[in-house]
Image (cartoon, rainbow, N blue to C red):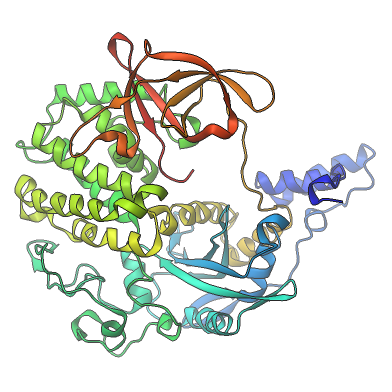
Length: 551
């Protein structure tokens, strides 16, 4: 019998209750009370406590390592456990797996300095599976990072000997370690980006002008694995300290890519918006211009699809924007709401940045056009100094010069983005319910959750009014569902470029169409290539924007 022919039994009440409790973070006290009510109503087959229902085990030992409370997992066991959650078709022919790591800290409580420092691992299959290799808490940023040593030691053995799984030995390759700049400096035992030799990709000496600036754009001397391990530039390294990751067979420069969530979205895009709204009068938008932009952003709320998670907000809420909102503005909405409002040279400068990021975030374009994206980013950095002054050239802006090189090594930006790790960190933070033993609480909640979930690729049926790009680069809007797998669609047949500078916008999936140049067709679901959304303009004109990032 084929795997997909096996009929799965209907879940029992006990199983459904367990899944419901995990999905909605129901506390054990609330679940205990519910179970007692259900038992009184005749469901005597149910256990009387949440701990029994969820099979919560009292097995986690908290060690004190270098002044940091830590729960360590067996890396091989964690990899095997989470590989087993994938569908058999995904793993049956596996000979090797690629993994990524993330190390970051987050505060646990508003009334305490205690912070959580998990080491998260991602199995880079579809979908990505993210889980902890260790959990640590500290009252401040750890000065002693020996809590990482056990994980690197286990990884070294697995990368050398392979992972025994399902009767075969899988090769394990550590693709990258994704961290924001302060955490990256901490785990690599180097100076912070605020230091004179703080760039982790080149040996340029910074210039102090109230902040550390990196003015050089040409003829940069790049760091290499050899130069890092042999400390060719001692000023870059912390004295008498060696990174635990030096024990692994990885490139100590290329394996620590720039994370575009922090560098580009929360860094450069936020900086540009602050300059346009609060900067010098030479670049700042007037109140009337800001009102126009806010009006456009509010109008876009109606057309932004639900897959984005957040709708556009006005510029007055800029201090509360999240990284996903800056990404949305950078890749999709900024070019629409700023055209005709932002001064011409400032808009062209922004579009060089936006276009480069659209290219680097696209799995297809990143392979073939990353060098062109590098030229755009180089132009952006050079012109930034002219338009906004020399103090524009901070570390985040300088890092753009190294971004395309990371893409040429690791693939599109979402291959090494912190976005999925940050999402997991938010889930983990919600698992703490009191200040008592937060590490054990989190470990227990994670253990309960892993028993419930299978790593099946998300597959949703296209909804009415959804917009998709077709394989022949036409665009369609679903009008109604026909027979199985076929939809009646309004197809936009004559698509023109929305913008021509710095290049034809059709290259990165932004088009201009017209409602008059459409026809109704039956479209097979398999012809729907990528999600998109449509923005209505005057006289039947439409702007069609392809969604490029990984959803």
